[in-house]
Image 1 (cartoon, helix red, strand yellow):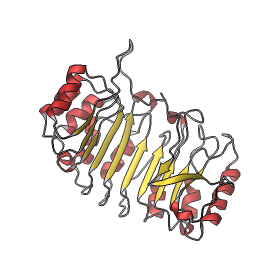
Image 2 (cartoon, rainbow, N blue to C red):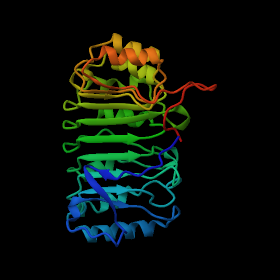
Image 3 (cartoon, rainbow, N blue to C red):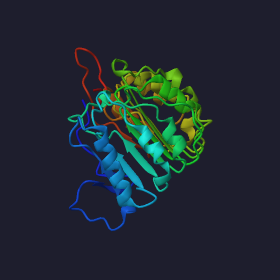
Length: 307
């Protein structure tokens, strides 16, 4: 399955297409601007021209929030991160950035080409939210970033190097971390051991929301989470979109207490009806989501988003 709807809001702001001339925006900082090439094989110059026009429209500090869809041949061309880093001086107002927000009809999630995103974090120290969709060619080096509050990687298969880099990074104010681990077929080669630095929580002292989603290794993840130090200070734990079954759920319930959580999301799962009910019953006061129960196919279990 893929993703076939666009976000209508981002960072709490309504999304407005940058090329929509019929929309009047009195305050450019009050919306999240979206750049999206209608032609999926658009030339790089077309995307750069659209980006430059948006900078001119939003003033000297640039947009507050930016959503980038198709930049042209995303199926085989990495996003041009140098366009952001070279214009960093005109992006001083940018607080929220989503790169790769495109539908499966434009480009399946596992085909979206990315690159090394480290330079963007280095060039934009005031950035608070970074969302990346797609992980083909994605890389990240360990960084220290004082501004980042929310980091989301949506993928059909997240490379282990990216997972390890997140764990090695120093992100003292990050409250929301979401990793779509995906499947091995699409490059998701991380194992539970690779999550150990994240689950220890030492470099993420402010973390309150942890999502380890869309995971082919959901049972492994559940076992690791059951004893993870970081869980004690979370308010939300999200293990949705993966292949969690009765074994993983049993491990979660047998581990450390989870009754302090505000929300536990296990939606899109392979638990039996009895186990799903047991999870809800044993966590009174917690908003437990065990919706979207799946049936195992002849080839086995499957994540919600994989191609």
